Length: 426
Ligand SMILES: Cc1cc2nc3c(=O)[nH]c(=O)nc-3n(C[C@H](O)[C@H](O)[C@H](O)COP(=O)(O)OP(=O)(O)OC[C@H]3O[C@@H](n4cnc5c(N)ncnc54)[C@H](O)[C@@H]3O)c2cc1C
Image (cartoon, rainbow, N blue to C red; front, side, top):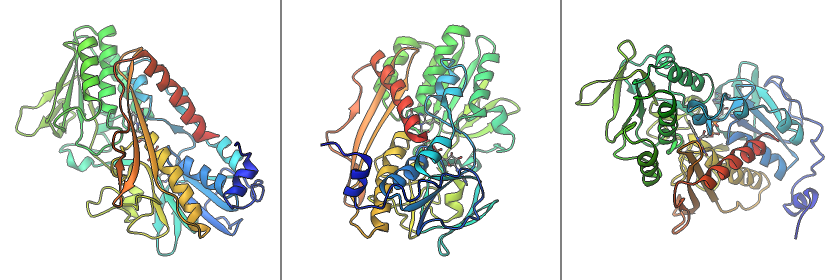
C-alpha cells in the first residue's frame, strides 16, 4: 500500500500540512512572534539538525519549526578527504544552502550563532534576539579540546597545522600545503583517542594523502600517529589497501598519543618519545560536544558529551531538550553523518509524539560509513542499532564490513553523498 502525503499525515494523526505552508521565511532574527500554537527550535543545521527540522514539519505541520544555523552555507565533512587527496578539485559539490529546505517545509531558518540556552525559561539567545520554544533539538556537532595539546594556540596553530576536521577553509589549507610540499617530504596525521567524529575518517585521509603523494610527490611519506592502540575502524581493509597501494608510503604507528605541538619547529611530541618532525602536519585534536552544548550544561559528568534518553534523545539533564548527532552519547552508534541523520528521524518522531501526548516509537538506528582507499576503490562498515537496557546497542549479527576493496563500494559511496545532501536540503 502506498500513502500520499495527506493520507500519511492523517494516518499519523497530525495537523494539516497546509496550516503553516505559507510561513517559509528564511533569514530574519530570533525575536519573532510565534506563528503557531507550538514551536520546536533546532540549533545547528548540519547532518542532524536539518533532518530533525524537516521531519518534525513533515510529521506535524501544525508545529512551527525554527532552525538556527550560524553559516549561510553548510560544507559537508563526508567526502572532504577527497578534496585533500585531489580527487575533487574544490568543495563546491559539498557545499549546500538552506533555501529549498526552508521553502519546501515552511521551516524558518535564522542565520545566527546561538550564544545562550536557558533550559529553565525555555529560551534560546543569539545576536539577533531571544526565542522561546516548547521543545528544543540541539545538534551543534563537535568542538575541540585544544587545551590538551601543549603549545597549541587555537588562534594560530590551525593556520600552520590544519585540523581540517570541520570542512571548509581548513580542508583547502591542508590541500594547498600538500601541493606546496617538497618531494620526499613527510606528512604527519595525528589521530586523537576515541570517541571522535568519524572513526574511519583519519585512515581514509591517510589513504587519500598517500594516493596523492604516490602520484605527485615521489619519495614522500605519511606518518600516522594514533592515540588508539590500533586503526579504529575497518582496520583489516585499510591495512589491505595500504599494503596493495601504499607500501613504504604510509607508516602507521599505534598507541602514539600526540600531547604537544611546536608549530615553529614543525614538530609534535609524543609521551615518552622523541619529537617527530613533519613538512605538513595535520593535527586532529581530541573532541567534545559543540561549545553551545557545554555552555548550556547539557554535557554529562565528563563535561564532554551529552547524555540522552536512548529512545527519545531527550537530554537526561534538561527537560524538553533533545540532543542528536556527534554531540550526544548514542551508545554503540558512531559519530557519523549517517548516524546523525538516523538519530534525527527517531528524535523528530518522538518529539512529535511527546508534543501530541502519544506513545513514543522504538529507537531503530542505522549507519553506513564509506571510505575511499584509492581513486577507484572504497570500503564500508554498516550497523543496525536498537535499545536494550536503556542503551543503544549494535543489533547482534547485523551489519559488518564490506568483503574487500571494491569499485562498487565507491559507486555506492558517491550515490550516498548525493542522496543524503539532497535529503538534507530539500
Ligand atoms: C574528514 C571527515 C570525513 C567524514 N566522512 C564521513 C562519512 O563518509 N560518512 C559519515 O556518515 N560521516 C562522516 N563524517 C562525520 C560527519 O561529518 C559528522 O558525524 C556529522 O557532520 C555530524 O552531524 P551533526 O549534525 O552532529 O554536526 P554537523 O554536521 O557538524 O552540524 C553542526 C551544525 O551546527 C552549527 N552550529 C554549531 N554551533 C552553533 C551555534 N552555537 N549556533 C548556530 N549554529 C551552530 C554548525 O555551524 C554546523 O552547521 C566525516 C567527518 C570528517 C571530519
